[in-house]
Image (cartoon, rainbow, N blue to C red):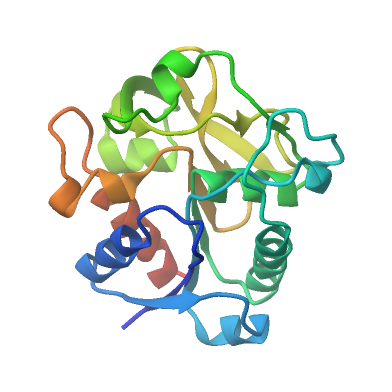
Length: 222
């Protein structure tokens, strides 16, 4: 059984949803929090979940709109990414996970996006909006469609892309909604597939479980 290290912290929203999704796909989720990163050599892949804002200092900017920063988590996840890549482990990032991956590769973030009306979480729950998918991308392989509906719960976004990263999905207002690496086994989405499947399945979005299934299939090909 494949073992997936999931970065688990008290700031992550609905961590149990990630564990349920990985288990539903036939793999074993392993909680990973401030542990010796050398343990990653025994994992088959790494999942970087959603959570709090990344400290702008990590991408050499002053804090103008970032909140609930956890510097210890930032530095830990950056170390996890470095070690996972050194061991050749595939990585899946969601929401904050996509943002920290972009920062790792030298990119930066928009600290507060302009179009909150279609992206930011409300008391009623996640927003939902349409997106455009790049032909030939991993999302095209998954959903076989040039346009898919996803959930949304963020106020920050990838701005300048990190080295080697390729944008493959775009929102109605032009934000990057998913990325992959041009040569490394790295996949990331700005949305929350773990809240688009199983007990959180919704009729107005695609099935998020397919993202986790795809990720695991790529691990098997390593």
